[in-house]
Image (cartoon, rainbow, N blue to C red; front, side, top):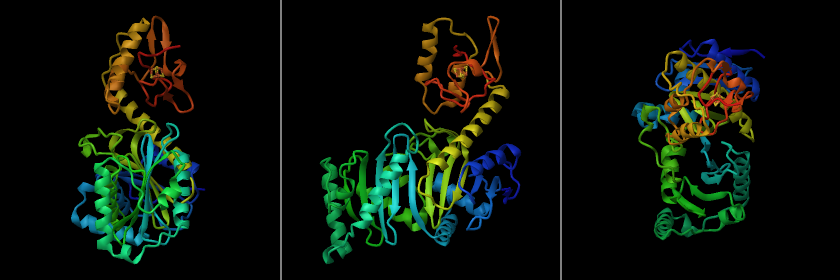
Amino acid sequence: MQNKTVSEPGRFDTTVYTRELDAVLANGQEESCAALVDVSDEKNMVQRVQGTPPHAPLDAAQLGLLTRAVLMPDELSSVQRTELNVLISALGGLQAVVIPMSKEDIFALRLSGSNRVLILLIRHRDVTVIDAGTVARAQVVRSKVEQNKLELSPMEQSYSIWATLVNKLMELTRKAGMSLQLKGVLKDAIQGDEYVSAGILVDLAQRSVLDYYLIGAVDAAAVLKAVLPLFGGALDLYPLLAAMGYARHNSDNNSGNNSDNNIGKVQLQIGERDFYWLRVPYFPLLHLPFDPIAMLLLYKKPQGNPVLDWSVLDRAGLNLLRLRIGVLLEGGLQTMLEPFPRTHIEFQAILDELGRLDREDVISRLDIGGFAPRPVDIDGTIQRCQECIYYLPHRKWCDLPELPVPVEPDWWCRLWKV
Ligand code: SF4
């Protein structure tokens, strides 16, 4: 099936970028749309569409607005906030939020046909970025809660009485560092699953917390405060992150130095479309963003398991990161090609230096690693990544734990080893 570009030509409208978008579409669900969006200027966008999606593709202004709201909500003007609200409502309203983090995933899921939202924090079983297990767990908890009709008593239906009581209880338990189950619905749904570390059930119409279970660092009152505007169309995810124990780092704003606590990946269901955003380029395993400007976006009909979608986006993100590093190296980025380590102690000293780096500091990693965008002759032996023991050919990836970067087979660094 032929993919077509449906956006105005921008700086991303080149073979390099459309090829990556087409790869995402080729490996994903049929009738999907993939785009690369410059959050600072939606004119710099390319969108590729596969087949005839059930809903018309969004235009550049709409995708730009949604993407800016996800990545840098503080920078939206009041006019843009209003436009965003109208757009989300026209698309069918926010139904679900998934924020994959390095060790756990945050879910905020609207229960079907209701004003209730279930918020869950689910730990990964292993180091995979979006763990199929967390998605399955969230679905199980949601369906158990949906089966259990949480009927409110007349007293509880009085917002003011209920909200006051809940807030007092939450404040007391938070101060005491305790957990508390209010009604037991979540306890029934979560109990026995050691990977679900927090569950909160809120009612958007009542503006209240209905139930919560296993609260650790999670502040249920703050979760409620975050979820109300989020599901009201503001699309600001950072208050929810903060309420779930992830304080935002100040360095996020346009510096390019983002942390695990800042958004690199987001999945939203708005109306009848699933949207997947990946900050590009992005380190899938270590959550190391590199260029804060571009977001890779896939949107399509919802499907049960997002792991395949994330994996094709990750691959495209890695390819784009590799391209970016290649441009830097070929553009003359100076790195420490010498001294080449001749002993185990010298080798280990470089590893130690790499290990002390901020894990988001890609440039210093290239510098200390001594990267070159070409093979290098050491003592008459031509060395390159392709023959190095750390090179993973299928991913074109350096598997040295201190140097996790996508590489080309013809590159080299001074930690080369056979
Ligand atoms: S250690 Fe260096 S030479 Fe070996 S694969 Fe990694 S980057 Fe390439």
